[in-house]
Image (cartoon, rainbow, N blue to C red; front, side):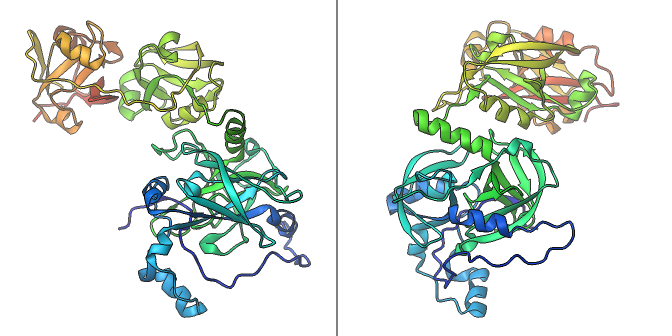
Amino acid sequence: MNRLVLRTLSCAVVMSLALAGGVQAQSAAPTLSGLPDFTGIVQKNAPAVVHVEAKYSGKKQAKARSGARGMPDAPDGDDDPQMEMFRRFFGMPMMPSPEEQQRTSLGSGFIISADGYVLTNNHVVDGADTVTVRLQDRRVLTAKVVGSDPQYDIALLKVDAKGNLPAVAVGDSRTLKPGQWVLAIGSPFGFDYTVTQGIVSAVGRNLGSQDQPYTSFIQTDVPINRGNSGGPLFDLQGRVVGVNSQIYSNTGGYQGVAFSIPIDVAMNVVKQIKEKGYVSRGQLGVMVQQVSDDMVKALKLDNANGAAVTQVNKGSAADKAGIRPGDVILSYNGQSINQSADLPPLVGQTPPGSKATIEILRDGKKESVPVTVAEMPRDKNAMVASADAGQPAAKASASSALGLSVQDLDGDTRQQLGLKAGEGVGISAISGSVAARAGLQPGDVILMVNQKKVGSAAAFRDATKDSKPGDTVLLLVRHGDQSGFIGLTVPGGKDE
C-alpha cells in the first residue's frame, strides 16, 4: 500500500503546450440557487496572478531541490504515465531532455503591490540563478528575490515594469471558518490561469513538519497540483486569504486535501523582509510533546489537551519565567493549546521582547505564568548531550515492577548532559518487557518520576516503591539530546 505523503506543489517541467493567452471576459453563466458565481472574482484578479519560472545551474541545483521538502518538483521524463497520457490524447510534443527539466522549476505567484512586489513559495525559487515571471498579458519580466524564509516557505520577489501593475486585495485569514467557499488561480502542470474552487475544510492545521513547525495551515478541498505552488487562495469577496503550498498525496496529484499558508503569516514575512531583510521568531526555549493517554492516566488529567514540557533550556525565556519540565502548557496568550503542535506557531509569531501569559498545569493546579519572549537564533546549533553508560556508579537500584535498573550519574556525565548536581539517574539495565516495549535503553537518563525530580538511585527507588499492578508510572527520559515522557504500566503478574 502506498503511504500518504506531504508534497509541495512546484512543477519543474517545461511544458510545450499551446495555451490560451489570457482570461477573456465572458458573460456570467446562470447559477444554481445558493451557489456562488466566481466569474467576477476571476476577471478582476487574474491579471495580478503570475507564472513563475526559476532556472538553476548544476552548482545550485542540489540546494534548490533540498528546499522542496517532501516531493520531487515534477514527474521524471518519459516514463511518467501522466506525461504519456498528455502525449497520446492531446498531441503534446515530446518533453524536453531530462537535463533541461532538472534545470527549470515552474510555479505560481501573485502581485501584492502596484510597484512590482510578488509573493510566491520559497521552494519555487530557492537557490535559483534566475527567476522570471509571466503576466497575463504575456509580458515576461525578470524578478529579483528580495528575501525568503524557508520556515514559512515564503519568498518575496520584485519586478520592474513601466506603469502600475495590477495587484490583489489582501484579506484576513483569521476570519476564515470551515465551510466557506474559496478558489485558487494558478499554473498546475504549466496550464496558466487555471481556476479551481472548493471550501475551507479546516483552519489552524499543523502538519507536524520538522521543516515548517511554525505554520498553522488552511486546509481546503480546492483541486491544486504541481505548479500551483505560490498561487493565491481567494475568498468570496475576491481577497487573498492564503498562499497555496502543499498537498497530501500518494500519487503526486490532487487527492482532495490541500494546504495554504495563511495570508496574515505571509504578509508578516513580507513586512519583516522589507524592514530588516530577514524574519525573526519568538522563542520560549522549551521542548514539548503531546499529552499521551499514559500521562492522562498517571497525572489524573481530565483530557489529553495541552503541551507537556519535557525540557527547558538553561537561561531561556521559559527558564527565567520559572517553567519546569513536567508542566503542561494549557494556553498561550489566551489561546487554548489542544495539542503540542499548536504551541510553536503561536510563539514563533510573537514579536521578540514582548510579554506573553502562559497557563500551565503543575501538580494538579492551574497557574498563570508571565514570560518575556526571546528571539530565536537565526542559525540555531543543536544541543549535544549523551549519557555514558560505561562509567561506574557507586549506587544502584532495580525496579522489578517496571523492568529496569538504574544507577547514580557521576559528575562528568552530568556535565556532558548539562545537568546540575542531583539531577537525573541513569538506566543501567533493562530486565523486563514493560521497559523494553517502551523503547527504554541502557544509557538513557530518567529525570523525573510522576513529575517529581529524581537525582539518585535511592530517590528513584523511593518514587517507585509504592507502584501497584495497574498503576501507570510517568517517567521523563532523556535519550541522547532529546527528552520525552514515557508511561510504564505496572503489569498485573510477573513481568516476563
